[in-house]
Amino acid sequence: MAKKEFNAKLYGIIAIILVGAVLAVITFSTFTSRYTAYYEDRVATTYVKTIVETGDGYNAYKNTLLSKDGKFGDFIRKTYLYPAIYEGYYPGGSTDGLKGLNDKSLKGEKTLNDDGSLQGKLINTMYTYYELLLKKYGSWDKYGDIFTEYIKVLKLKRNEIFGDTYFDDEVFFTCLEANVSTYGQKLTGTEDEFDKNTGVQTSFAKKGIYEEKYGEDYKFTYTATDILDNPSVTDDSTSYVPSGAKGPVDIEDIKGSKIITVQVKCNNEVVIDGIDIAVVQIGKTWYVDTVMSDDTSPLYNFYK
Image (cartoon, rainbow, N blue to C red; front, side):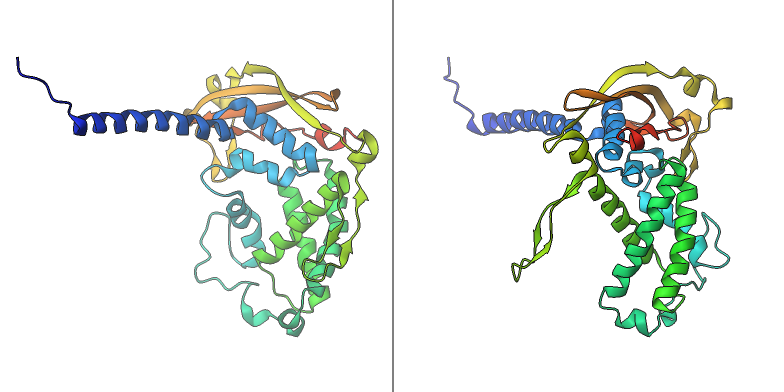
């Protein structure tokens, strides 16, 4: 009988295939475990966590149908900003050929020469109004009204401070996101900060509302205590019209729908016994549906 030789080349190929297969499984497992949107309970708890941790209903919408098929920022531009920038623009239309308030020729001397001082003044001025909006609506549930009213006042206040009519999406996002961050710091507190070049202290630590109420080492935890099928979504399309960034979602695209009850604790004590968050699955991805999750105000007011 002829002696069989060890085929190193073939063994090497098989080994590479096996190792590749194992790595692929590990990579996919790691990816899906980190990719919140693959799990209905994680989508719901992340949505709740984003709001509770810093009162940030704005960024929480990145977990919703409003971010389907694109960025949340693009939805805001096309639906609320462009109508305020371009005369004659309608949501979903094109800005081609339209001259808007973002035309550089509208920049006045103060805009061109601002060293950041006027921008800072505008941000501070708008923060007061941002807090008034949250107090007025009690949450970010009526995001359309918040965007519309915020943009209207922002245009007026910028005109007063800068002395021109220039307005673009950068002005909006810079101010709003700074206001959202400041509101979060009001809840969480701030740390001492120092100039990295001079070492001079630029701000001092300040306790936030949460630390005052729950202690220095407070910790929030989130648990999906109940997960129920929501057959009214998939079985009764006449009474359900979920809204996405590009308009109503086709009912036939929805593979599943759940109602997730999320409980919030702080230092192991219940602060929100349960809030129901509706989620829908399109493809492999789960999204919070803000049409059915229509009252998140308890997430903003539990500490008061």
